[in-house]
Image (cartoon, rainbow, N blue to C red; front, side, top):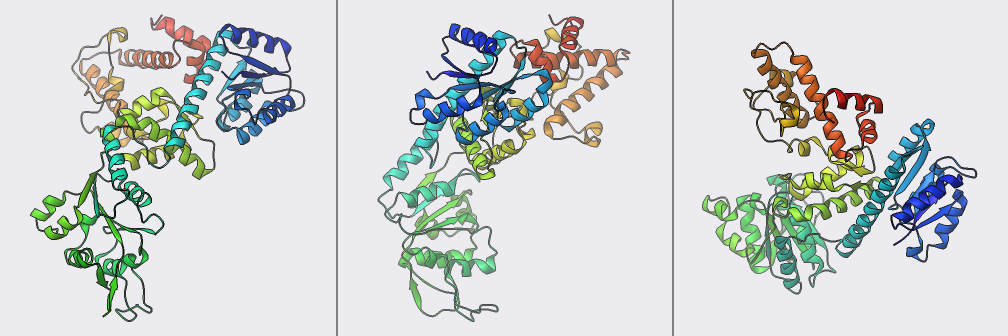
Length: 504
């Protein structure tokens, strides 16, 4: 295992951390200033195992600060977890470093068991990220371990030496164009162009010209001859997305091209030979469209030579973690920022989401997290409102008798709304999740007021505070100081509240 690097000019700090980590079978290497660390990193560049697994650095040292070291390390080793140690007076700069790429900050004087646990968490995260990066490097084109996706991959492999027409079906956002590109890439036409057109996104009057081109003077505004998508895809692949929305009269022209390989430009009199492989895709039920008279049956059979069904993301939940990490890496690269990591709890929450928008929706969520998540490690609480709203689905029973919080599995504060709420509707909230708990709170208050109770404020306040504290303690595995920091209250306050609320 690679060592934990400790950087601090205080010999006592280095000594204490070294002994504590060695007792946990974690090897260490210590440095007194940033220059030594940077020189050691350069020396270890050719031997990865000599580099650090995690780096723990003080923030103020002679010859260079921990923040400067953090900037330089992140530029060269973006995936290396860095823990910044700081005195309480340096908290602002530590938080700034935390948001800029540090894994966590460790206030001095620190609790030694907590420091070791934090370093252990950083080691686990580092190892998980190494495995994830290896997996992504092995499968950069398309990701999927689910059986349904493996069937798709096998089909792409079997079709790799074929020019046969393929029809890809699947819900919107499931990645049909990715499959089409993979079919092209692994075909004999890979050296030719891949041209894609969404037939549903182009007005009917323009679609014919887009597909087949036009001659000069064919219609008003046609000042020059224009090659259409069929000619642009010569020798390659033409991907017709949302083929089910193609106008009926154009379906006849497409059928002719597929039948004899020739077409006419709009306004033209000379046929043009099309050396193109056609891959079509749709989210619609084409058999039903044929029955309803909206799609030509003969064209359907021409397109439906080989059909590939792409599963919805909810059918391949085991692929969500790998896809999430992949999209977080992509988003960070596009935005020019440090890639964010995601906790197991956040991944577990994502796995419960239905993803009506499929893979495209997951990709958008990862873009959102890259911009909006406050720290480098994404926790479950950082997920967007539409995902968090999925946590609670049980309706609130307004008539249920009140019970002590320790006896409840859930409370009105976490209940989903059972109908429109005048109060919730008028209050500006930041998403569906906020509506859910606020509506539940309103319903509980209404129920208690209807009973004629006069302790509504105290009763609900106690339950609210109890739920907040218990949730924070659960996220920190019972560590009160860390829970208080996350809640934004003092350590004495959380101790007093635990006693007052009977949460010992």
